[in-house]
Length: 502
Image (cartoon, rainbow, N blue to C red; front, side):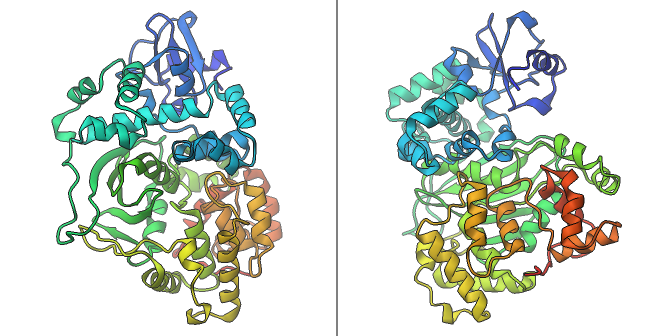
Protein backbone atom coordinates (compact mmCIF):
# COMPACT_ATOMS: atom_id res chain seq x y z
CA UNK A 1 0.00 0.00 0.00
CA UNK A 2 2.91 2.38 0.67
CA UNK A 3 3.32 2.90 -3.09
CA UNK A 4 -0.19 4.37 -3.40
CA UNK A 5 0.85 7.89 -2.41
CA UNK A 6 -2.57 9.50 -2.83
CA UNK A 7 -4.30 6.93 -0.66
CA UNK A 8 -1.59 7.16 2.00
CA UNK A 9 -1.84 10.97 2.12
CA UNK A 10 -5.62 10.74 2.59
CA UNK A 11 -5.18 8.23 5.43
CA UNK A 12 -2.66 10.51 7.20
CA UNK A 13 -4.76 13.64 6.75
CA UNK A 14 -7.82 11.89 8.18
CA UNK A 15 -5.76 10.23 10.97
CA UNK A 16 -7.27 6.88 9.98
CA UNK A 17 -6.23 4.28 12.58
CA UNK A 18 -7.36 1.45 10.27
CA UNK A 19 -4.09 1.85 8.38
CA UNK A 20 -1.79 1.69 11.42
CA UNK A 21 0.72 -1.06 10.69
CA UNK A 22 -0.10 -1.11 6.97
CA UNK A 23 2.47 1.62 6.27
CA UNK A 24 4.56 4.26 8.07
CA UNK A 25 4.75 7.98 7.33
CA UNK A 26 8.16 9.65 7.47
CA UNK A 27 8.49 13.44 7.53
CA UNK A 28 11.55 14.77 5.73
CA UNK A 29 11.64 18.05 7.67
CA UNK A 30 11.64 16.50 11.15
CA UNK A 31 13.28 13.14 10.27
CA UNK A 32 10.56 11.37 12.29
CA UNK A 33 8.30 8.51 11.23
CA UNK A 34 4.75 8.00 12.53
CA UNK A 35 1.61 5.94 12.35
CA UNK A 36 -1.04 7.21 9.92
CA UNK A 37 -3.21 8.06 12.96
CA UNK A 38 -0.59 10.21 14.70
CA UNK A 39 -2.41 13.01 16.61
CA UNK A 40 0.00 15.77 15.52
CA UNK A 41 -0.90 18.21 12.74
CA UNK A 42 -0.39 16.34 9.44
CA UNK A 43 2.69 17.48 7.51
CA UNK A 44 2.55 18.85 4.00
CA UNK A 45 2.18 16.07 1.42
CA UNK A 46 5.42 17.20 -0.23
CA UNK A 47 7.28 16.38 3.00
CA UNK A 48 5.79 12.90 3.43
CA UNK A 49 7.55 9.66 2.55
CA UNK A 50 5.89 6.28 2.97
CA UNK A 51 7.54 3.02 4.04
CA UNK A 52 6.16 -0.52 4.29
CA UNK A 53 7.89 -1.27 7.60
CA UNK A 54 9.32 0.48 10.63
CA UNK A 55 12.66 -1.14 9.81
CA UNK A 56 12.70 0.50 6.36
CA UNK A 57 11.99 3.91 7.89
CA UNK A 58 14.74 3.39 10.44
CA UNK A 59 17.20 2.35 7.73
CA UNK A 60 16.37 5.55 5.85
CA UNK A 61 17.46 7.56 8.88
CA UNK A 62 14.10 8.39 10.49
CA UNK A 63 13.37 8.17 14.24
CA UNK A 64 10.22 6.87 15.87
CA UNK A 65 7.64 9.47 16.92
CA UNK A 66 7.43 9.87 20.70
CA UNK A 67 3.68 10.57 20.65
CA UNK A 68 2.14 7.88 18.45
CA UNK A 69 4.79 5.19 19.08
CA UNK A 70 4.71 3.66 15.59
CA UNK A 71 6.87 0.74 16.73
CA UNK A 72 3.96 -0.41 18.91
CA UNK A 73 1.28 -0.30 16.19
CA UNK A 74 -0.72 -3.44 15.39
CA UNK A 75 1.07 -5.63 12.89
CA UNK A 76 0.19 -5.50 9.23
CA UNK A 77 -2.72 -7.90 8.58
CA UNK A 78 -1.16 -9.03 5.32
CA UNK A 79 1.43 -11.16 7.15
CA UNK A 80 -1.38 -13.37 8.45
CA UNK A 81 -3.49 -13.20 5.28
CA UNK A 82 -0.78 -14.05 2.81
CA UNK A 83 0.94 -17.40 2.35
CA UNK A 84 3.94 -16.39 0.22
CA UNK A 85 7.62 -16.30 1.13
CA UNK A 86 7.63 -12.74 2.50
CA UNK A 87 4.60 -13.33 4.73
CA UNK A 88 6.02 -16.59 6.07
CA UNK A 89 9.35 -14.87 6.74
CA UNK A 90 7.65 -12.05 8.62
CA UNK A 91 5.78 -14.49 10.84
CA UNK A 92 9.02 -16.31 11.66
CA UNK A 93 10.91 -13.09 12.35
CA UNK A 94 8.14 -12.03 14.75
CA UNK A 95 8.57 -15.40 16.48
CA UNK A 96 12.27 -14.62 17.04
CA UNK A 97 13.84 -17.07 14.59
CA UNK A 98 16.47 -14.61 13.29
CA UNK A 99 17.62 -13.75 16.82
CA UNK A 100 17.89 -17.44 17.71
CA UNK A 101 19.15 -19.00 14.46
CA UNK A 102 20.31 -16.11 12.29
CA UNK A 103 19.40 -15.53 8.65
CA UNK A 104 20.62 -19.03 7.61
CA UNK A 105 18.21 -20.55 10.14
CA UNK A 106 15.35 -18.43 8.80
CA UNK A 107 16.14 -19.42 5.22
CA UNK A 108 16.37 -23.10 6.13
CA UNK A 109 12.89 -23.04 7.64
CA UNK A 110 11.53 -21.37 4.54
CA UNK A 111 13.29 -23.74 2.14
CA UNK A 112 15.16 -20.97 0.32
CA UNK A 113 18.73 -19.70 0.28
CA UNK A 114 19.65 -16.74 2.54
CA UNK A 115 20.27 -14.62 -0.58
CA UNK A 116 16.79 -15.34 -1.95
CA UNK A 117 15.15 -14.44 1.36
CA UNK A 118 17.20 -11.23 1.66
CA UNK A 119 16.35 -10.21 -1.90
CA UNK A 120 12.61 -10.80 -1.50
CA UNK A 121 12.36 -8.89 1.79
CA UNK A 122 14.39 -5.96 0.50
CA UNK A 123 12.28 -5.74 -2.66
CA UNK A 124 8.97 -5.63 -0.80
CA UNK A 125 9.78 -4.17 2.62
CA UNK A 126 12.84 -2.06 2.00
CA UNK A 127 14.72 -3.93 4.74
CA UNK A 128 16.40 -7.31 5.05
CA UNK A 129 15.84 -9.88 7.80
CA UNK A 130 18.59 -8.50 10.04
CA UNK A 131 17.13 -4.97 9.90
CA UNK A 132 13.62 -6.30 10.56
CA UNK A 133 14.88 -8.31 13.53
CA UNK A 134 16.77 -5.26 14.80
CA UNK A 135 13.58 -3.18 14.71
CA UNK A 136 11.85 -5.88 16.74
CA UNK A 137 14.71 -5.93 19.26
CA UNK A 138 14.33 -2.17 19.67
CA UNK A 139 10.62 -2.55 20.38
CA UNK A 140 11.28 -5.38 22.87
CA UNK A 141 13.88 -3.22 24.60
CA UNK A 142 11.42 -0.35 24.85
CA UNK A 143 8.78 -2.60 26.39
CA UNK A 144 11.20 -3.85 29.02
CA UNK A 145 12.56 -0.38 29.75
CA UNK A 146 9.09 1.07 30.26
CA UNK A 147 7.28 -1.84 31.92
CA UNK A 148 9.91 -3.39 34.19
CA UNK A 149 12.44 -2.34 36.78
CA UNK A 150 15.17 -4.56 35.32
CA UNK A 151 18.73 -3.22 35.05
CA UNK A 152 19.65 -2.00 31.58
CA UNK A 153 22.28 -4.71 31.13
CA UNK A 154 19.66 -7.42 31.68
CA UNK A 155 17.29 -5.69 29.27
CA UNK A 156 19.97 -5.56 26.58
CA UNK A 157 20.58 -9.29 26.93
CA UNK A 158 16.88 -10.14 27.06
CA UNK A 159 16.09 -8.07 23.96
CA UNK A 160 18.74 -9.95 21.98
CA UNK A 161 21.51 -7.35 21.71
CA UNK A 162 25.08 -8.60 21.51
CA UNK A 163 26.45 -5.81 23.70
CA UNK A 164 25.43 -2.90 25.89
CA UNK A 165 26.93 -0.54 23.33
CA UNK A 166 24.78 -1.83 20.47
CA UNK A 167 21.75 -1.68 22.79
CA UNK A 168 22.43 1.96 23.70
CA UNK A 169 23.21 2.97 20.12
CA UNK A 170 20.09 1.31 18.70
CA UNK A 171 17.74 2.81 21.31
CA UNK A 172 19.15 6.30 20.72
CA UNK A 173 18.99 5.91 16.96
CA UNK A 174 15.42 4.57 16.87
CA UNK A 175 13.80 6.62 19.65
CA UNK A 176 16.08 9.68 19.87
CA UNK A 177 16.34 9.04 23.61
CA UNK A 178 18.77 7.10 25.74
CA UNK A 179 17.49 4.03 27.60
CA UNK A 180 17.54 6.00 30.87
CA UNK A 181 15.56 8.84 29.32
CA UNK A 182 12.98 6.37 28.01
CA UNK A 183 12.55 4.97 31.52
CA UNK A 184 12.22 8.42 33.05
CA UNK A 185 9.39 9.20 30.64
CA UNK A 186 7.49 6.08 31.75
CA UNK A 187 5.16 6.46 34.70
CA UNK A 188 6.60 4.90 37.88
CA UNK A 189 3.33 3.01 38.45
CA UNK A 190 3.91 1.02 35.29
CA UNK A 191 7.08 -0.58 36.62
CA UNK A 192 6.82 -4.07 38.05
CA UNK A 193 9.01 -5.89 40.48
CA UNK A 194 12.30 -7.49 39.56
CA UNK A 195 12.47 -11.28 38.98
CA UNK A 196 11.39 -13.40 41.91
CA UNK A 197 11.03 -17.12 42.48
CA UNK A 198 7.53 -18.53 42.85
CA UNK A 199 6.36 -18.63 46.47
CA UNK A 200 6.82 -22.01 48.10
CA UNK A 201 9.01 -23.26 45.28
CA UNK A 202 12.62 -22.49 46.20
CA UNK A 203 13.99 -24.56 43.32
CA UNK A 204 11.69 -23.06 40.68
CA UNK A 205 13.35 -20.90 38.01
CA UNK A 206 13.27 -17.16 38.60
CA UNK A 207 10.43 -15.38 36.86
CA UNK A 208 9.90 -11.87 35.60
CA UNK A 209 6.36 -10.50 35.57
CA UNK A 210 5.37 -7.92 32.98
CA UNK A 211 2.08 -6.19 32.22
CA UNK A 212 1.60 -5.05 28.63
CA UNK A 213 -1.14 -3.71 26.38
CA UNK A 214 -1.72 -5.52 23.11
CA UNK A 215 -3.28 -3.16 20.52
CA UNK A 216 -5.72 -4.20 17.83
CA UNK A 217 -7.78 -2.70 15.04
CA UNK A 218 -11.33 -1.95 16.08
CA UNK A 219 -13.91 -3.34 16.24
CA UNK A 220 -13.19 -6.49 18.19
CA UNK A 221 -15.91 -8.85 19.46
CA UNK A 222 -14.36 -10.79 22.34
CA UNK A 223 -17.31 -13.09 23.00
CA UNK A 224 -16.62 -15.93 20.59
CA UNK A 225 -12.86 -15.44 20.85
CA UNK A 226 -12.50 -15.84 24.60
CA UNK A 227 -15.59 -18.01 24.87
CA UNK A 228 -14.06 -20.61 22.58
CA UNK A 229 -10.74 -20.59 24.43
CA UNK A 230 -12.48 -20.92 27.80
CA UNK A 231 -14.84 -23.69 26.62
CA UNK A 232 -12.04 -25.82 25.17
CA UNK A 233 -9.44 -25.15 27.90
CA UNK A 234 -7.30 -28.18 28.79
CA UNK A 235 -7.19 -28.72 32.57
CA UNK A 236 -3.80 -27.82 34.03
CA UNK A 237 -2.70 -26.10 30.80
CA UNK A 238 -5.43 -23.46 30.41
CA UNK A 239 -8.13 -21.88 32.53
CA UNK A 240 -10.66 -19.04 32.64
CA UNK A 241 -10.44 -17.07 35.86
CA UNK A 242 -11.73 -13.65 36.93
CA UNK A 243 -12.42 -12.51 33.39
CA UNK A 244 -9.00 -13.60 32.07
CA UNK A 245 -7.87 -16.50 29.90
CA UNK A 246 -4.73 -17.98 31.43
CA UNK A 247 -2.42 -20.63 29.98
CA UNK A 248 1.09 -22.01 30.07
CA UNK A 249 3.51 -21.36 27.22
CA UNK A 250 6.32 -23.57 25.93
CA UNK A 251 8.97 -21.16 24.62
CA UNK A 252 12.42 -21.59 23.00
CA UNK A 253 14.42 -20.57 26.09
CA UNK A 254 12.07 -21.64 28.88
CA UNK A 255 8.40 -21.42 29.68
CA UNK A 256 5.88 -18.82 30.69
CA UNK A 257 2.38 -18.16 31.93
CA UNK A 258 0.13 -15.57 30.31
CA UNK A 259 -3.16 -14.02 31.40
CA UNK A 260 -5.14 -12.24 28.65
CA UNK A 261 -8.06 -9.96 29.52
CA UNK A 262 -10.20 -8.12 26.96
CA UNK A 263 -10.50 -4.37 27.48
CA UNK A 264 -12.37 -1.75 25.43
CA UNK A 265 -9.30 -0.51 23.55
CA UNK A 266 -6.69 -3.22 24.06
CA UNK A 267 -5.98 -6.67 25.45
CA UNK A 268 -4.41 -6.63 28.89
CA UNK A 269 -1.49 -9.08 28.84
CA UNK A 270 0.21 -10.27 32.03
CA UNK A 271 3.28 -12.36 31.25
CA UNK A 272 5.45 -14.35 33.61
CA UNK A 273 8.62 -15.64 31.93
CA UNK A 274 11.52 -17.76 33.11
CA UNK A 275 13.77 -16.25 30.40
CA UNK A 276 13.22 -12.72 29.11
CA UNK A 277 14.72 -13.60 25.74
CA UNK A 278 11.33 -15.19 25.06
CA UNK A 279 9.44 -11.90 25.43
CA UNK A 280 9.10 -10.96 21.75
CA UNK A 281 8.16 -14.50 20.77
CA UNK A 282 5.61 -14.78 23.59
CA UNK A 283 3.95 -11.52 22.52
CA UNK A 284 3.84 -12.68 18.89
CA UNK A 285 2.20 -15.94 19.93
CA UNK A 286 -0.41 -14.17 22.05
CA UNK A 287 -1.23 -11.84 19.18
CA UNK A 288 -1.52 -14.81 16.86
CA UNK A 289 -3.72 -16.69 19.36
CA UNK A 290 -6.21 -13.81 19.49
CA UNK A 291 -5.90 -12.85 15.80
CA UNK A 292 -5.09 -9.28 16.85
CA UNK A 293 -3.50 -8.22 13.57
CA UNK A 294 -6.68 -8.85 11.58
CA UNK A 295 -8.35 -6.13 9.49
CA UNK A 296 -11.97 -6.39 10.73
CA UNK A 297 -13.30 -3.67 8.44
CA UNK A 298 -12.07 -5.49 5.35
CA UNK A 299 -13.40 -8.83 6.63
CA UNK A 300 -16.79 -7.54 7.75
CA UNK A 301 -17.16 -5.36 4.68
CA UNK A 302 -16.93 -8.35 2.37
CA UNK A 303 -19.06 -10.72 4.47
CA UNK A 304 -21.77 -8.08 4.90
CA UNK A 305 -22.27 -8.09 1.13
CA UNK A 306 -24.03 -11.43 1.62
CA UNK A 307 -27.62 -10.62 2.67
CA UNK A 308 -27.71 -13.70 4.92
CA UNK A 309 -24.50 -12.84 6.81
CA UNK A 310 -25.10 -9.08 6.91
CA UNK A 311 -27.39 -9.13 10.00
CA UNK A 312 -24.89 -11.34 11.86
CA UNK A 313 -22.04 -8.94 11.08
CA UNK A 314 -24.13 -5.90 12.06
CA UNK A 315 -25.09 -7.52 15.38
CA UNK A 316 -21.53 -8.30 16.54
CA UNK A 317 -18.88 -6.86 14.19
CA UNK A 318 -15.21 -7.63 14.59
CA UNK A 319 -15.28 -11.36 15.27
CA UNK A 320 -11.83 -12.92 15.27
CA UNK A 321 -10.64 -16.47 14.61
CA UNK A 322 -9.31 -18.09 17.80
CA UNK A 323 -5.96 -19.60 16.87
CA UNK A 324 -3.16 -21.15 18.91
CA UNK A 325 0.17 -20.46 20.61
CA UNK A 326 1.57 -23.82 19.50
CA UNK A 327 0.66 -25.31 16.12
CA UNK A 328 1.81 -28.85 16.94
CA UNK A 329 -0.20 -28.80 20.17
CA UNK A 330 -3.34 -27.78 18.35
CA UNK A 331 -2.93 -30.52 15.73
CA UNK A 332 -2.72 -33.14 18.48
CA UNK A 333 -5.78 -31.66 20.19
CA UNK A 334 -7.70 -31.63 16.90
CA UNK A 335 -7.16 -35.38 16.52
CA UNK A 336 -8.11 -36.01 20.14
CA UNK A 337 -11.31 -34.05 19.50
CA UNK A 338 -12.41 -36.08 16.48
CA UNK A 339 -15.99 -37.33 16.86
CA UNK A 340 -16.24 -36.58 20.59
CA UNK A 341 -17.82 -33.78 22.59
CA UNK A 342 -15.84 -30.78 23.77
CA UNK A 343 -15.97 -32.05 27.35
CA UNK A 344 -14.56 -35.44 26.35
CA UNK A 345 -11.82 -33.82 24.27
CA UNK A 346 -10.80 -31.64 27.24
CA UNK A 347 -10.67 -34.69 29.50
CA UNK A 348 -8.49 -36.70 27.09
CA UNK A 349 -6.14 -33.75 26.49
CA UNK A 350 -5.89 -33.07 30.21
CA UNK A 351 -4.87 -36.66 30.91
CA UNK A 352 -2.29 -36.51 28.14
CA UNK A 353 -0.85 -33.27 29.59
CA UNK A 354 -0.70 -34.70 33.11
CA UNK A 355 1.04 -37.88 31.92
CA UNK A 356 3.51 -36.46 29.39
CA UNK A 357 3.65 -32.70 29.94
CA UNK A 358 6.38 -30.92 31.87
CA UNK A 359 5.25 -29.89 35.34
CA UNK A 360 5.57 -26.21 36.24
CA UNK A 361 4.83 -24.01 39.23
CA UNK A 362 2.05 -21.44 38.94
CA UNK A 363 2.35 -18.75 41.64
CA UNK A 364 -1.39 -18.05 41.32
CA UNK A 365 -2.38 -21.73 41.29
CA UNK A 366 -4.62 -23.38 38.72
CA UNK A 367 -2.04 -24.26 36.06
CA UNK A 368 0.28 -27.20 36.47
CA UNK A 369 1.70 -28.43 33.14
CA UNK A 370 2.97 -27.45 29.75
CA UNK A 371 1.21 -29.31 26.98
CA UNK A 372 3.51 -32.22 25.97
CA UNK A 373 6.11 -31.51 23.33
CA UNK A 374 6.30 -33.59 20.15
CA UNK A 375 9.45 -35.23 21.53
CA UNK A 376 7.66 -36.24 24.73
CA UNK A 377 4.66 -37.57 22.82
CA UNK A 378 6.92 -39.66 20.59
CA UNK A 379 7.35 -41.98 23.55
CA UNK A 380 3.68 -42.35 24.40
CA UNK A 381 2.07 -45.79 24.55
CA UNK A 382 -1.01 -45.60 22.29
CA UNK A 383 -2.58 -48.60 24.04
CA UNK A 384 -2.83 -46.50 27.20
CA UNK A 385 -5.12 -43.98 25.49
CA UNK A 386 -8.82 -44.39 26.17
CA UNK A 387 -9.92 -43.85 22.59
CA UNK A 388 -10.84 -46.03 19.60
CA UNK A 389 -8.02 -47.92 17.89
CA UNK A 390 -8.47 -45.98 14.63
CA UNK A 391 -8.05 -42.63 16.42
CA UNK A 392 -5.00 -43.93 18.28
CA UNK A 393 -3.48 -44.79 14.90
CA UNK A 394 -4.32 -41.31 13.60
CA UNK A 395 -2.68 -39.69 16.62
CA UNK A 396 0.51 -41.75 16.44
CA UNK A 397 0.75 -41.10 12.69
CA UNK A 398 0.52 -37.36 13.30
CA UNK A 399 3.12 -37.43 16.07
CA UNK A 400 5.52 -39.44 13.91
CA UNK A 401 5.15 -36.98 11.01
CA UNK A 402 5.77 -34.00 13.31
CA UNK A 403 8.76 -35.64 15.01
CA UNK A 404 10.32 -36.57 11.65
CA UNK A 405 9.92 -33.05 10.29
CA UNK A 406 7.65 -34.30 7.50
CA UNK A 407 4.92 -31.90 8.62
CA UNK A 408 5.60 -28.20 9.31
CA UNK A 409 2.74 -26.37 11.01
CA UNK A 410 4.51 -23.42 12.66
CA UNK A 411 4.20 -19.74 11.71
CA UNK A 412 6.48 -20.21 8.71
CA UNK A 413 4.75 -23.33 7.42
CA UNK A 414 3.63 -23.58 3.81
CA UNK A 415 -0.16 -23.82 4.10
CA UNK A 416 -0.89 -25.80 0.96
CA UNK A 417 2.02 -28.17 1.50
CA UNK A 418 0.88 -28.75 5.08
CA UNK A 419 -2.68 -29.39 3.93
CA UNK A 420 -1.45 -32.02 1.48
CA UNK A 421 0.74 -33.67 4.12
CA UNK A 422 -2.14 -33.77 6.61
CA UNK A 423 -4.56 -35.20 4.07
CA UNK A 424 -2.08 -38.00 3.31
CA UNK A 425 -2.05 -39.16 6.96
CA UNK A 426 -4.45 -41.94 8.00
CA UNK A 427 -7.65 -40.71 9.65
CA UNK A 428 -7.41 -37.11 8.42
CA UNK A 429 -10.54 -35.95 6.64
CA UNK A 430 -11.64 -32.46 5.53
CA UNK A 431 -12.85 -31.39 9.00
CA UNK A 432 -9.55 -32.06 10.76
CA UNK A 433 -7.45 -30.66 7.92
CA UNK A 434 -9.44 -27.44 7.74
CA UNK A 435 -9.55 -27.00 11.53
CA UNK A 436 -5.77 -27.26 11.66
CA UNK A 437 -5.45 -24.91 8.67
CA UNK A 438 -7.70 -22.38 10.42
CA UNK A 439 -6.32 -22.55 13.94
CA UNK A 440 -2.71 -23.76 13.60
CA UNK A 441 -1.66 -22.47 10.18
CA UNK A 442 -3.72 -19.29 10.55
CA UNK A 443 -5.30 -19.51 7.10
CA UNK A 444 -8.07 -16.85 7.01
CA UNK A 445 -9.77 -18.74 4.17
CA UNK A 446 -9.98 -22.16 5.84
CA UNK A 447 -13.55 -23.45 5.78
CA UNK A 448 -15.01 -26.38 7.73
CA UNK A 449 -17.90 -27.18 5.39
CA UNK A 450 -18.38 -30.62 6.98
CA UNK A 451 -18.69 -29.21 10.53
CA UNK A 452 -22.14 -30.08 11.89
CA UNK A 453 -22.40 -26.77 13.72
CA UNK A 454 -21.66 -24.81 10.55
CA UNK A 455 -24.13 -26.89 8.53
CA UNK A 456 -26.83 -26.59 11.19
CA UNK A 457 -26.35 -22.81 11.39
CA UNK A 458 -26.36 -22.51 7.59
CA UNK A 459 -29.63 -24.42 7.30
CA UNK A 460 -31.19 -22.27 10.02
CA UNK A 461 -30.33 -19.18 7.97
CA UNK A 462 -31.68 -20.63 4.74
CA UNK A 463 -28.26 -21.44 3.29
CA UNK A 464 -27.44 -24.82 1.66
CA UNK A 465 -26.89 -27.56 4.22
CA UNK A 466 -24.80 -30.04 2.26
CA UNK A 467 -21.00 -29.55 2.29
CA UNK A 468 -20.72 -29.29 -1.51
CA UNK A 469 -23.53 -26.74 -1.84
CA UNK A 470 -22.26 -24.77 1.15
CA UNK A 471 -18.76 -24.65 -0.36
CA UNK A 472 -20.21 -23.27 -3.57
CA UNK A 473 -22.10 -20.55 -1.69
CA UNK A 474 -19.04 -19.74 0.43
CA UNK A 475 -16.95 -18.94 -2.67
CA UNK A 476 -18.25 -15.37 -2.40
CA UNK A 477 -16.82 -15.12 1.13
CA UNK A 478 -13.24 -15.72 0.05
CA UNK A 479 -10.60 -14.95 1.30
CA UNK A 480 -12.38 -14.63 4.67
CA UNK A 481 -14.24 -17.92 4.99
CA UNK A 482 -12.67 -18.68 8.40
CA UNK A 483 -14.36 -15.53 9.72
CA UNK A 484 -17.66 -16.55 8.15
CA UNK A 485 -17.39 -19.75 10.22
CA UNK A 486 -17.19 -17.64 13.39
CA UNK A 487 -20.37 -15.77 12.47
CA UNK A 488 -22.17 -19.02 11.66
CA UNK A 489 -21.05 -20.68 14.89
CA UNK A 490 -22.35 -17.70 16.85
CA UNK A 491 -25.93 -18.55 15.81
CA UNK A 492 -25.75 -21.96 17.53
CA UNK A 493 -26.76 -22.35 21.18
CA UNK A 494 -23.71 -24.55 21.73
CA UNK A 495 -21.11 -23.28 19.25
CA UNK A 496 -18.28 -25.35 20.66
CA UNK A 497 -19.91 -28.77 20.75
CA UNK A 498 -19.44 -29.71 17.09
CA UNK A 499 -18.96 -33.32 16.10
CA UNK A 500 -16.94 -33.58 12.90
CA UNK A 501 -18.45 -35.62 10.10
CA UNK A 502 -15.42 -37.74 9.12
